[in-house]
Amino acid sequence: MAEPLLRVGLLSHRVTAEVTLRGPFGITADGQALDRVAAPGRWRAVATRRGVRLLDPEHRCVAEGGVVALAPSTPDAVFVAHDMTVGIRFHWQRQEDLAFQGLLRLESRGDVFDVVNEVALETYLTGVVASEMNPLAPRALLEAHAVISRSWIVAQLEARRSGTSRHGPARTFEETETTVRVVRWYDREDHEDFDVCADDHCQRYQGVDRAAVAGNAVFDAVAATRGVVLVSEGHVCDARFSKCCGGMTEVFSTAWGDLDLPYLQAVPDLAPGPVPWALPLTEEAHARAFVTGRPPAFCATQDVGLLARILPPLDHETRAFYRWEEILSQEELRAFTQRRTGVDPGPVRALRPLVRGPSGRIALLAVDGEARRVEVGRELEIRRLLSRTHLFSSAFVVEPDRQGPVPDRFRLRGAGWGHGVGLCQVGAGVMAEQGYATEAILAHYYRGARLRTDW
Image (cartoon, rainbow, N blue to C red; front, top):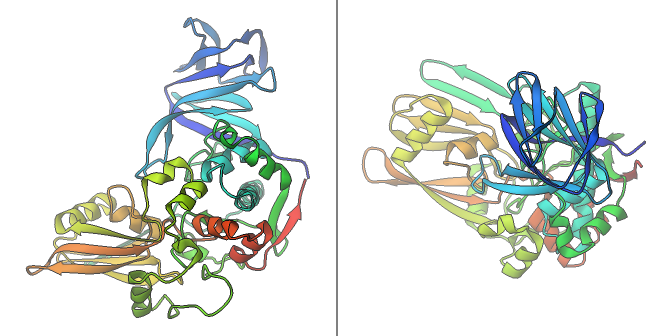
C-alpha cells in the first residue's frame, strides 16, 4: 500500500482569506500552470462569481478560477493560514495563525470557498502529534499517538472509499405531549468536501511550527512508526482517543452510533490487578461512589509538572482533568435546555441519568421540567446542553440545592475530560513516564488489536 495523500480542510465557507507564503510557490488555476511564481509575502483570496481570485501582496489579481492551487517550489516552503479557528465551539476556541507544509488549494463552493491542505499522511501526522501532545512528552507517548492517529485517519479513508458508515444516523427526534427526546452525535457530517478537518472535531492539526519546538522528537516518533497501524479482525482500527478517561474508558456506542467495536472496550485505567471500585458503573449507586471519590488510576495524577510535559500549551488552562465540579442555576439550566433543544421545560425539578455507559458517562439524560420532560443524548450533546460551551465529560452526578418547590441550583460532580473512548491521553502519558513501552500502552487501551505495517 502506498502512503496516502490527504485533503485537510483548514478553513471552510470563506468569502475571503489571507495566507503568508514562506518560500516560493507555483500557481495553477483550474489545472493550468501560470508562468509566475508566488513569492514570499502575504497573499489574499476572495470569492467571486467566477470562483476564487488570488491577489498578490500588492493586491493585484494573479489568478482566478474554480480551483486555485499553490504548490511549494522548494522542500522547505510553507504557508501560514491566518485567523484559523482553533477549538471550534469548545471553551478554548480562539483564532490563530498556523503554518503548514504541502499544497494549498482554494476551492470554490458557489459564493464561498474552502482552504484545503493537500499533504502526505506522514507529514500530516507530525502536525497532529505535536498538536495533540506536548512535543516534549515521553517518546513512547509520541509513538503511541502517531500509531493511533495514523490508524484513525486510515480507517476514515477506508470508510469513505467504500461508501460505508458503521455509525448510523447522526440525529433522532421524538416528541409526545409530555416528552421530547433529542439524540445526536457528531462524526463526519461536516466533511463531505475533504478527508478530515484540522480541529478537535477530528484530531488537532495545527501545523509544522509546533513539531519543531522539541527538535526532532516528533519527527523521530512519526518516522519510527512509519506506516504502522492498529488492526482488528482484518480492519484498521477506528482508534479513538480522549484527554482523560477519568479512571475507566468508555465504549463506542455511548458517544456515537449503536455499535461497539471489539478493540474499544471499557478498560480500567490501571495496571493489571483488582479494580478498586464497585462495578458496573452503569448502576447509579456505583457511578456515584466512583465519581465522587478519587480512586487510583494512571490518569489520576496531580503532578503539575508531568501534566505540563504531556499536554500541549492549549490544554494548560485547565487543571481539573480527573475530577471536576460545576454549578448551574435554575435559570441557566432552563435557558440552556431551550437554547439547545428548542423546548422550554419550565422550572426544572430534576436532572436524571436514564442510561449510563460502563465508564459512568451518561448516554441519555432527562431534564424533568414542570412543563415538559426533555431527554437528551448522546454524551457530547449532553455536555453541550449543560454549558455555554461544553462540560468536561458526561460522567457526572447531580446534587440539587433545594430552597423552594424546585432546586435553586444543581451541583454537578464529574470525572474525566472528553468522551473517554480508546486511549486516555493523560493516562498514556503517565504510563510512558513510568516506563511502559509503546506497544504496552497500545495493548492497554486497544484490547486484542495488533500492529501492522501498511507502507
